[in-house]
Length: 217
Image (cartoon, rainbow, N blue to C red; front, side, top):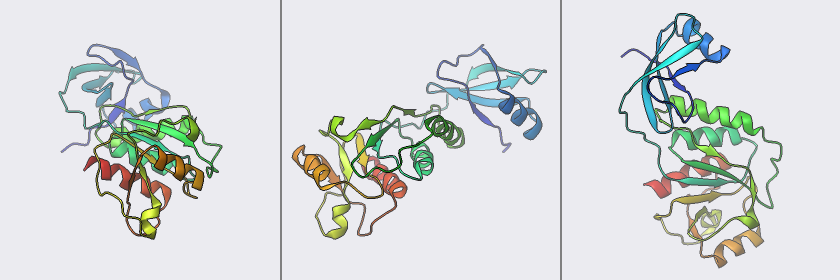
């Protein structure tokens, strides 16, 4: 099957729109892929599209009726050194919304969030989604509503008995250094649902991916 490139064109895409292409995207379509056709998506919809003769604009055609595999999970996560990998994996797994949470042990304080948004777009284009997850402004742990939320509880690696699955739609993962004692106490007091990721301590970005799979299985 011919490899047709998929391009995110914004959440307001509709049939009949003529959308200017960035120089980078125009070069990719016309010189790298050497194509006059593409798939464009945004806002939960996917469309057939054609590039005009100038290579600078794309005409949005008919809706492909492709079912958007995006889910309804919100991932709360502490920024980490490899936040780019976390964003990439979470997007590929269909996460709807990404919320950075500053915890006591968070050390990654200089994240280029515009770059993270570009990574999410690229991952959505690759993973056949019709939408790109929203990445919000960072919030502090103490401002997070801990009710009806699951969290990756590394205490399971030390023998704590935890449930295997849960029906919640929000999951929280901590930083490389894990949650602090004070944060664990807040989670426990709020009856947040600790989920086990196994008997080994995982890298934070892998912990996020497994935590997402635990609440979507």
